[in-house]
Length: 429
Image (cartoon, rainbow, N blue to C red; front, side, top):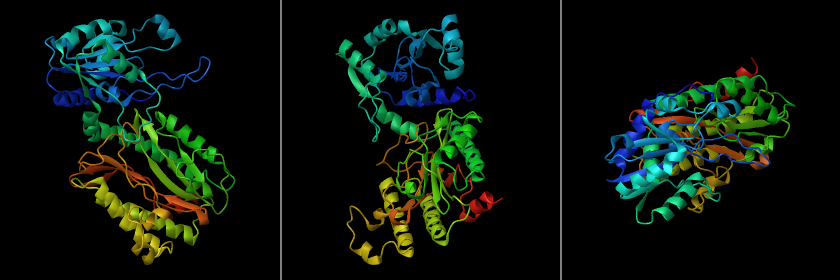
């Protein structure tokens, strides 16, 4: 890992909160992600499962966390099981966590090697009356491929048929959505690295530059600042490509007169940032481009003010829709008659703004959080309205990350240039 070690108090706090929600006499098991193979003997870079990471800080494959708050043996109330390290592994793969390092990382004192897991679990299961299993229940999850967690659940339910099985994920959705101050610091660091990347490319962009060259400049700046790299696959779409919502080919030339939509964010310590900015290839917006840009920026500013504790995301998105209607009418893209005669299930503004405005962000770019419960202080959301005019080869989206507080919102990207005039001045400095 490139990032500095995280204060273990964060993970101690997270485990305490999770354990406090567990049913009496139950234990919970969390597995690391698999190392994903590609072909031959190649693998993708390891990406830890965010649940075991949030609870323990362990950023290593073949790891298991067990929580059993009511266990009679106090040392078995929280345990880590890790791949045993040795000199051979250290030479060929790099050092793995020792038991001492695992404690310094997680705050968990009881650490066993992985080959002891089944023996110790059998003893624990004789005492436990229920087991929390951790399936991926995210609304947007693709669960076609079986992972380490799935295989363990299948094995456990076969071996221990008589136990009651409970779900960890609803608890995690609630708990993980409210960020600890230490998490906010990590996310702010990710946003600060994103700012460095954005400022770097403003003087780099010019007619003739390739979209992938911009991506390369960002990657360089992120890695040199201890980032994990891109928090998600970056979108660098110039001209008509900016109207493709998830354009990731990034293989076209940026041409004079076009606007580039860039949706990217640095990851730091596995926490994500998520930003979108749009800049003119030649350093100057046309009057029409600036009008659309300013309309989106207006909606973004006003939308952020609507994210307050107690409001539901459904209510919020309806309010943002009304903000966008006004701007689209002003731009001559829709009429009041269009609004009057619209289909309530697909309002008129959706022709030019077809996606949602906000999503939770944290360890995952589309992080855990309820879409039906009211917004809470400590939630962190993106705010990302856009207008996409295919017939004009113009797509504008602007996005920042906001922490919700009882006294308003804190923009973690407040120092990143966003005003049209500021962008032009920096590009022509």
